Image (cartoon, rainbow, N blue to C red; front, side, top):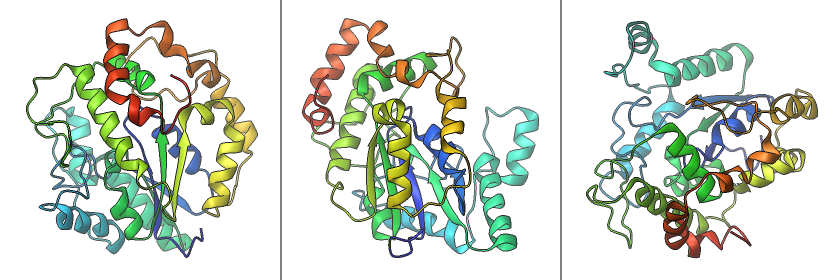
Length: 298
C-alpha cells in the first residue's frame, strides 16, 4: 500500500450500505487485515461515547482519536461484557474482546510472524470520523447506497435507532430525543452522513464508491480501489465475484445480518417492489438535496 505509506484503511458508509461485503473482498488482497467495527459502541473498543462518533464533537474528539491510535500502538481495550450475549459468547468476549478483539489479535500475530500488514477498519460507525482518519494518514473508502434501499434492509432487520446515544454532531436538524418515527430517524442519519462525506470528496486518500456500481460492475470498481491504494491481488477476482455475486438469492427471507451470496445486479432495484409510498416519500423529502450529489435519478 502506498499513497505516501498510509497507516491503514477504513471502509465506511451508513450501516447496511455494503461495507461488510466490500471488506470481505479487501480481506483477500495481500498485506491487509480486516478489523471488524472497532468503533461499534456496543461491541468494539471500550469507551466509545456515541453510536456514530464525529470529528465535529469538540468534547470527545481527543478521546476518540486516542482510541483510534490505541489500535496502532498496541494498547486497545475492548468491550468485555454484553448483556445480550449467550454464555459461550460471553466467555469468548471476556477472553478475546469479541469479534473485534479476535480480528485485532489475528492482525498482531500475522504482523509479528509475516511482517508489514495494514489494518483495514470495516466500520460504518466511523463514517462521521473520516476527516480525522484522513488527518491521521488513513485511506478511506466510503460506500454510498440509495437511501431507500438501505432503509428496506434496516427495516427487514427490525433495527431501531436511539437518537439519545446515536450521534455526536451538530445538525440543522434537531437530533435530540426520540420523537421521530424510525424511517424519519434513518432519513436524517443518511442525509447527515452523506452531507458530511460530500465535503471530503477532494481529499487525498479518500475514495467514494456507489453500492449500485459495485453490484453491476464489480471488477471495474474493485480494480480502481486496488490502483488507488496499491493493493496487490492474491486471488482470482473474477472467480470470487462469480461465486458470491451471481447467486439466485436477492433478498434473504430471514433476518441473517450478513448474507454475502446474492444476485447483486437484481439487488440494486429490489427495494422498489417492497417499499411503502409513505416511507419512500419521507426518505425522498429528507434526503433529496444530498441525494442529488451522488445520483442522477431517484
